[in-house]
Image (tube, rainbow, N blue to C red; front, side, top):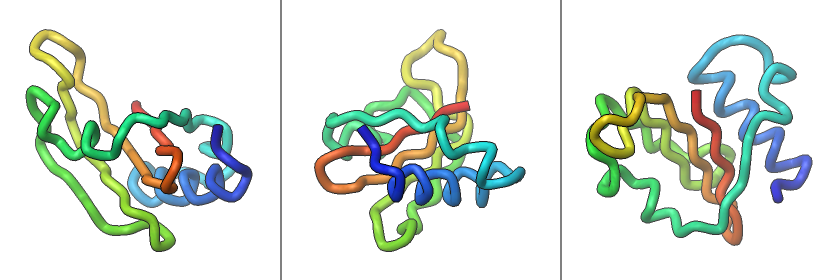
Length: 91
């Protein structure tokens, strides 16, 4: 589960790439303990663009048009590595 501070970091990251206001994204992120390597693009069928700039010092990925497997719908995916937990948002 993400802390309030981690939700704030995720919200700023999503807003910077998606527009809108930080408040629009405060409670939309999920969390996982899956390793960050599962989100580095190697496990995806396709993706069109990836931004890997850190967010507030935390390793992060923003993928455009990710297709996790052939036949699945494409989404944009935001992932931030907070150490023991990863914050995830997809749209």
